[in-house]
Image (cartoon, rainbow, N blue to C red; front, side):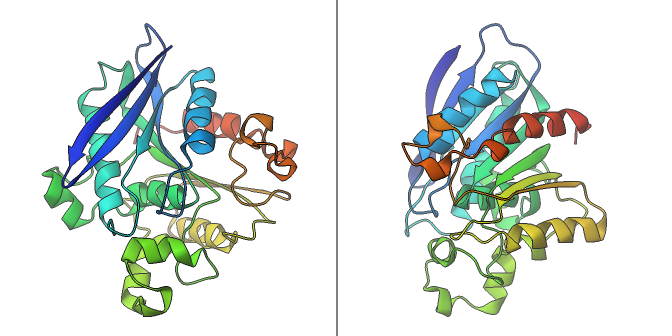
Length: 271
């Protein structure tokens, strides 16, 4: 296995892309991972490196994006970072032993909102114009959303939307809430989704995931939804490796989500 850190300048900031490549690999499916952290910081240890290694063990090459976070960077800055990384991987697919049309995004919590944005909001004209790319080129084959922040219109992690908008939650207009709420922007161009959540999550209630799955179901788009009964927010791989000694982050019923998502990816035709 080869691990490499790539550094890129995107506008006024740097982003890091960490690659996890199996030596001699060719034409593999791959994942581009967005750690969570409320768009304020990045939970890279638990929701980055460990997750990349888990997917590598399942036969995929993996990449972890350290996208810009903090109040200075508001929407669509994060989506621009994600789109830049996805387009870079498509442009260099042969170099990394991956299939250009089989790149999936994976995101946790606020990173789940970003992965969902890559699947649903990829046609944002500001993003396309900034990167100078054609419509659809920054769309993943599919997206895996882990306990994602989804909607500003139901009980949610309000601070994520404050960081996204640069405003206090009460000052975000209804129009802006609609534009940032993934379930309100699903259309026929939205990429397939695999969503998982725990019903006990007190930080990001699962109602957002249910509404997003419903939006996909309503228009006949491909979606898989897994709800596990136990576990607080941020359980990552749900095993001892990512628990950091917190027993509530060890949830045997949820530990199969990586393998389940891999089987789901295999079931999809190239998008």
